[in-house]
Amino acid sequence: MKRFLLAFAILGLSGCSTLSDLNPFPAPFDPVELGYLADARFLTTKVYASCGTDDTPGYAHGVLEQIQRAQIYSKYIPSNKEVIDAEGILIKLSTELTTRIDSKSYSVTYCHLKANEIGSALDDLNKVLGEKKR
Amino acid sequence: MTLDQLRTSSDPIIKAAADRAAQLIAYYQAGEITKNELDEFTANEIDLEKFAKDVTDLSRKVALQEAFDILIQIIQIASSLKP
Image (cartoon, rainbow over all chains, first blue to last red):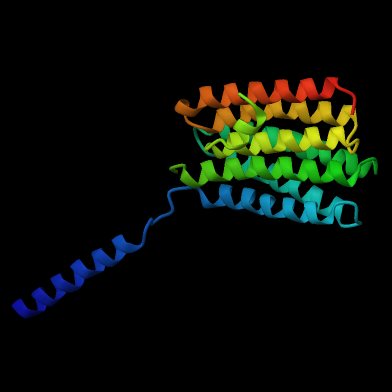
C-alpha cells in the first residue's frame, strides 16, 4: 500500500510539473478577439498585394467585416472600452478604403498607403491584445 | 525633433507612424496622391494618435502624444507646399 501511495505521489507531482511547463495555460489573452483581428491583419496583406486588380474589393470588404466582427465580440468583454474605441477607428479607416474602391475612384498608391495604414494600426492593437490579461 | 529622428525611435508605434508620414510626404511630393488624399491621411493620423494613446500604458502616452503632434505638423507643413 505504501509503495502504491509513493508511486501515486510521484506520478501526481510529475503531472503538476508537466502542467506548469505548458506556458501559459490557459492563454493570458482572449484568443477569439485576437483571432478576428489577426485574420483582418492577414487580409490587409492581401489587399496590398491585390491593389488595382479585380480581387481588391473582396479583400477590402473582408478586412472591414472582420474588424466589425471583432468589435461586436469585444463589446461583450467587460472593461474593454479602449479596444472597442480602437476598433472603431479601424472601421473608419477601412470604410474609407472600401468606399473609394466601390466608387472605383482610387489609385494603386492610395490603396497601398491605406492598406499599410490599417495594417500597422492592426499590428499595434494585436501586440497590445496579445499581452492583455483576460 | 526631426522626422528622421522619429523614424529611428525605439518605440515601434512612433517608428511606424514616422515611416508612414515620410511615405505620405514622398508620394505627395511625387504627385502620386492628391492634396485631398493627403488631408485624409493627416486626419487619420490624428485618429491614430488617439488610438495609440488608448491602447498603450500611461508611461508611453506623453511620448506618443509629442511624437504624433510633431508628425502631424510635419505632414501639414509638407501639404502646404506644392508638389
